[in-house]
Length: 196
Image 1: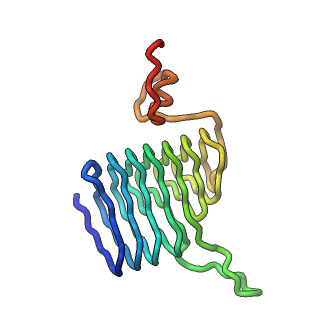
Image 2: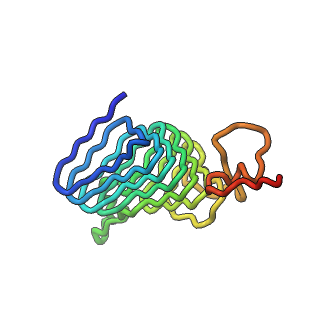
Image 3: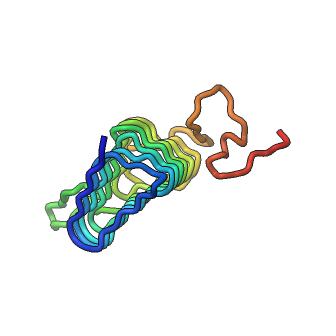
């Protein structure tokens, strides 16, 4: 697989360090937009920015199997460090069209930035919509629709729309029956406790 990059406009910037890889398509239309990918990332998907002065930021050590990010209407998408996104996931700051209240012409589906913390696992087919906030150390269940801001860390979100279905959780990329406290916290960069 390869990557295609299409830049239309001026002052747009893409940062992809040598330790990271990207496969898929990047399209930027506008001025002063940025796509910032951290060290040691493995990203596959499509990144689309239309407009001006918007940023898609992906933190160190994050992986995407297949993610479509749409950044519109002067909003940003921020994804933290050490996240793991499965396949068929969509993250968007806008519905791309207007839902209008007839009696006064007011738009009802206003665009908003999306913020995803560090160490977030997003399951297959999830949709993360405008205004969503997912704190550090959370899990989003497969096929879930996240459309609001959450503030509690260590939660499992699932459903359409997503709600908290479990608290006091964390996750790890490896599969085994039992994890030590150090293993559960290793994503934070904490030195292992040598006495245990």
